[in-house]
Image (cartoon, rainbow, N blue to C red; front, side, top):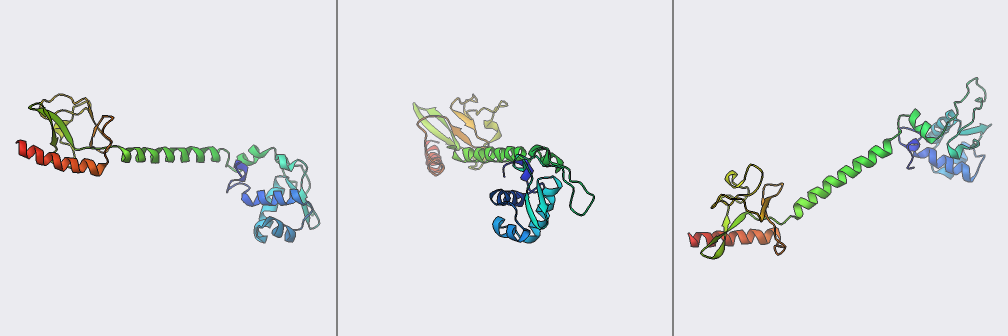
Length: 214
């Protein structure tokens, strides 16, 4: 099923079931294949005709069997019983996929899923960041947490042109701070492992302390 030849718009998954059923038990009628492959009767007819067009199956009367080397994806050229039509033999599973326009679809699907997983992991990484909404300054020998005017954004005056965080008092870059992708400040220190709720509580405490110092 991982091969492009068995993609939805190529031979399809039903073809793989029928090939497997004929491999286990050759010379089956359509009715017998419906039971051994668990494929509906209408789909079995369509799939057998599709496989026969590639020379992968052949029938004698009402019984069907795999063509020689069919499991390798190589069919044989046989005249269709009762008509002058001659089936074009398959030249390998890659060629079958190419004829149906599905070659490379598995690789494209895998690349898409990889990109989606990377985007999802990036979103998880952003949500796991420890965020704070304040800057620490030193006043009278002790550190004071300066809360932002609004808790949902960073004032533009706190951001340097190169994206660094500026101390609102000194105007110099704060080396221990950076701006996350959601616009919140992040304190870079191994000891800061607080959750967002804990940082929000610290923000409220800092606001109270700042007002008392002021």
